[in-house]
Length: 330
Image (cartoon, rainbow, N blue to C red; front, top):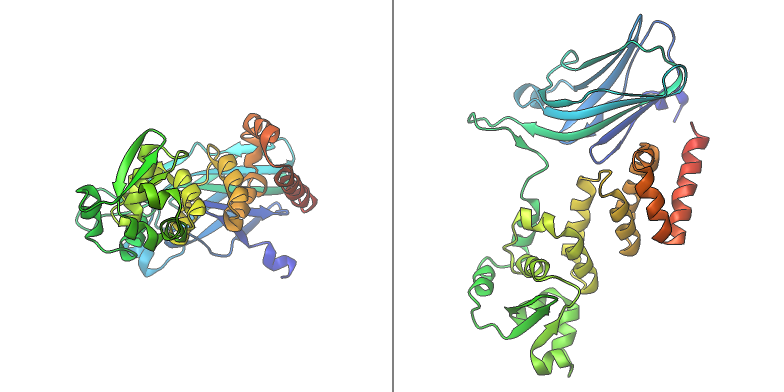
């Protein structure tokens, strides 16, 4: 890719966009290539005259005309030289964006040299055609749908009403009755337990001491096809651990996809650690980019220093190699 092409390219991660600009002449206008966040393609533009104007807007289309995004986001600007090293816009909450004039950030501080524009998309909503409250595009029922199509709808009733249950699962703080046939169908590990003369087969019990009763209930609700989105979100990490332990491939995939969607400064280190532990390269790469390429490592300096005390040495080496690679190119 030529230098001129790369000058207009915006890098993206889940809910994040980053545009690196090497330099701007005293009177210049530049518009980025389109980049996709959520359901829309977007542009960033900069115009330098007496002030520097930064604009964010969706690409004009039928979707944008009929269902313009209602966006909440924060824009940050970092520069390599001049009087200012970092600027942060106060933030935008639930603003309907239809054209290039709906969000304009006028910056009076003189800027020189290279600079980077980061956009953190906090939420994107669409209007209710019936006049109700706008709904977030990131709060759908994909998890419940994925669970439902891999099981039969009546299994949920079998679990909740304990119809002909024949196995007891002992969690760390309680027990739940279930059906060995259902568990064996969904997990090769459970299938092996019930197919050999192991204590699980003889005693009709399974000990899952590393899960709370609430997390264990969420696991069974997923297996039986009646998990709720909020319940899933509350127990994603425990469900990921169980999916890996009991070889439930579709649950592991759902957890991975969900964890990719809402990486932030509060959870990125935990997710990076789990991505390394459970061999999730895409989640690992996204966490690395969030920390290093988007500069979030500086926002959580204390937490990161604590993370260095217990994290895997190979993982720490990968992070610092990524830091070196990024600063070589800046």
